[in-house]
Image 1 (tube, rainbow, N blue to C red):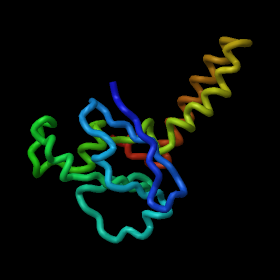
Image 2: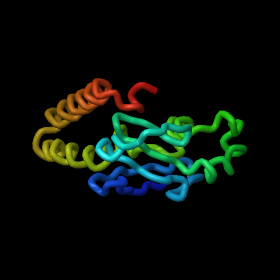
Image 3: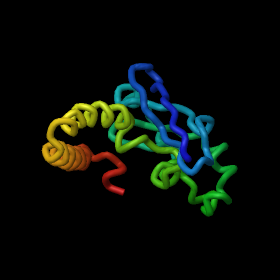
Image 4: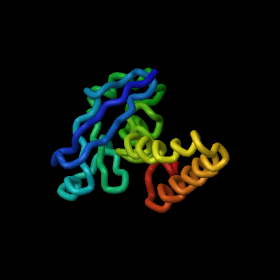
Length: 145
């Protein structure tokens, strides 16, 4: 079982839903979240930050390093990018707000299932393909892993 948590960005304008996979880390492992607007002021990049399409997730590497033996990774190789890409602290879905967006989009299509099952199946297939193509074009990290 995994836990998710909704976090506001530093400027307070946007939210991201984070997944804490494999039940090891929790919200204490996250320092800050920056949306594309508030990340513009970040001048220094470091190994505790994940950059994804203007979004920046800064992890608390002091807490995370305590688990390095559990991860099976040497402290020197343990980075925020590794944590994110391995699913320990990552977006729910492909983007920071994908969980909410996906549910809203899918809800509209699911109404078809009650009236035309074949149209519903086709609409779900097309929707999934279009989402994937869009995320690839936009350059989201999870689509190029």
